[in-house]
Image (cartoon, rainbow over all chains, first blue to last red; front, side, top):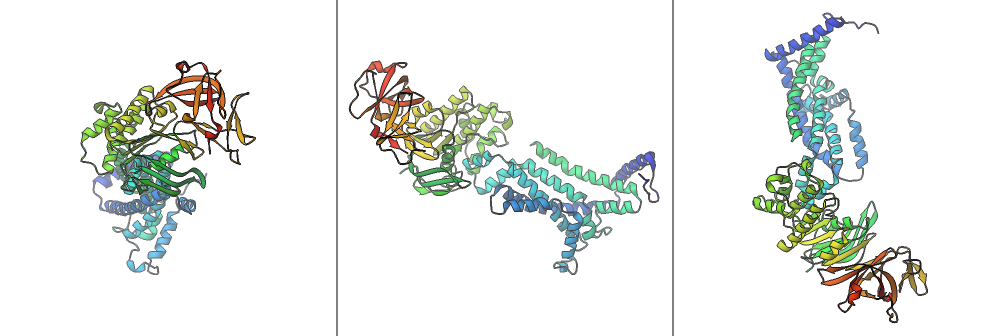
Length: 245
Length: 338
């Protein structure tokens, strides 16, 4: 394999790679604990957009997933196929579609969502929604048939039947939420196209990594990547406790 | 007023009918046994009676009013313990208290839960905090039953309650069900292959075969194959003995004959046979006492078929010794075709 052309400042060789990875780790802690405003701005943008999109996709996706997995209606298989296909949606395609809808010429152009965090969140919701729906439906489909019989025979009404069934498949729903969260947190295409990577405004951690890598600032890129991992850890840690219950 | 009235019930799975009942009634505070081979529609009937699902066609009235799943008239009043007793992924206490919470009866005292657990032989202190996965099969079945008993239902429906559990659990489950009837007047509907138990405790029985009711009461079902012989139809029981039934239907392929225990009589092998009567010679297997009717009942083996015969008070005492050869008399016109 021919050697890869490195930008200015890029360390080469095995020793150099270890060195700049180490630098990245040190810099990650420096960025976090020194309260670097630019890093914290990207962290805040990431957390805001992903929190909104996850909340929206869970509120919409879990009941839809339950309905898709539980109810029998004409066209269910075709709908399931469509949702499963949407799992492979490329983020740049979603970014492009959202851009088309919220740009000035688009039908929602007047809402001023382009290059804003709500705009990014809408795109990320579209990304997470099929994941939440498909994986929730799978969890519900795998539900023991005896559960419904048990709940009804113990006097559960329709609402309690839904809530208790979801609680019984909570591990599957949690897995759906974490998978969707991982996809939302790590996407670049939507944030770049819809958000525009505007410093102090719509720059997320992933778009910042892309920018820093483009500038040849590998250590900063690695540092931001580690920050992203720390956030993911902070989210999955409480989830692991929930899984144990 | 009947507790249940089923009218023109047809239930289908994927378009295929699995249960068809024209009309059937069940009274309050009774014990009804549902008998039939596997695939006869017993579990489907119990699910319909438990209001787990509505029938594909027809109407089920509960306490005189048409009722459907989730109706207030049936929620918490009808409790079904399915064949595979499923426990929620929670503690024993949470499983037993679930129904009361679902019915917003949170104010109900803890004594009621303790009582339900005691009825199935579970000690509160030892079991209440135990998670669902730390129970044996028999314990899980008893927890599932306790969850139903805590509701003090009007009807308790048990689908094969004693299958796959140890002898001690079987006795506790049987006792708990009968205790519920004595204590709260709970009507019981029980499907079980433990026919001796059912016939001992049941005030009524319903026989099902291929999704069709085959009458009620103590009876023997003969599934054929039937052959036309003159105006009657016969079924071979042994190489030399046939069961004769009058007025057969045109289509004998899926025909079933039922003969009630009261239409069979027992006598010594050498005794004379009255005109119009048919006789079969068989082996007297056992004699049992039916608590619900106060009658003695004999089981006579002829070929592979066990005929159930009520013994009259005048029957010879020598006929009460199992192991001997006896004659069973019957009138071919007193059979029912299905």
